[in-house]
Image (cartoon, one colour):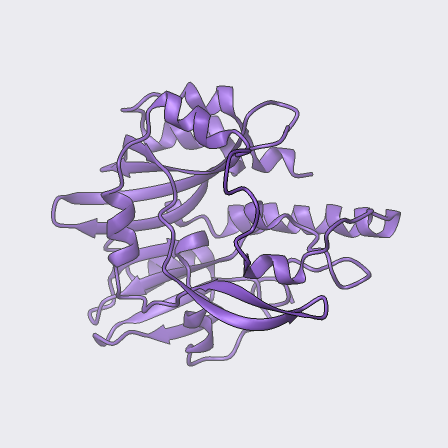
Length: 281
């Protein structure tokens, strides 16, 4: 189920700098997912993300890697730039722990995008090293847990019911990636053009400069969890999140954000209720 959403290292390393976005998307298929489309002073940029694994059999290791395109041409491969974190105190398995969570940001705050565009290009050796499991000093937890670990089980045995549910959730996950592929949209499009591509939005989100953002994605809980209410049925590293299309005050697209570049705060601040007719109900 997960294999179609990850890319073997050998396949990824065969992608040359200078390749077109269309060529790369065709080669990588559904595993290449949109992250952002923006225009800044020196060009138009599209970022796509891929979860790359060291071998065909999905052995230990692997990680998210980004491909940055300028004017539809691949210019470099970069590692994800971590968002600033804040630490909260929570109860985990009966113990008080410190939990790190990513900071929220405004849709018009492009600092995260700019840091990614300006990140250093990875060499082939650096990519290979990045994908290998880290076993050196400091591997043990420093006492601050990522938020995802607070609800994740330490071990899980998949029952037939869970497997059946997971198959349906992975099928939905792939459909969401295809339906809300941010690469289909372009800077400068009108709202009518965007809605002809993606349909009615789930929500609208007002921007501080007088524009609007349309939010697309899943209207229900996604991904679901197993029958014990603990294990997400789609791995977090390959799960569809949401997409936002930002418009200026004149009604033209200025940016498209997906996946890691979509902030859940935007859904919290949205004006209109989720439409049950769009996405998964």
